[in-house]
Length: 84
Image (cartoon, rainbow, N blue to C red):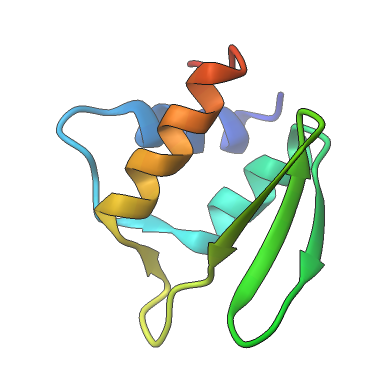
């Protein structure tokens, strides 16, 4: 795993939950883990990883991801044994 991906993973698992993680960094982490990303309607994307499909909304107009999305991503990664 690249150093930047490790840094993003650590930020996702930081307590308390951060509301200051750039979405582009999270997408890059997903790709680094082997995910395929498909564009959906509006700001939605499908992340295909771990044999599963998860749909997320890209944040807008700010580039940072909200705490609820971070908590969801953290839980999904934990369930699939991806931790810092």
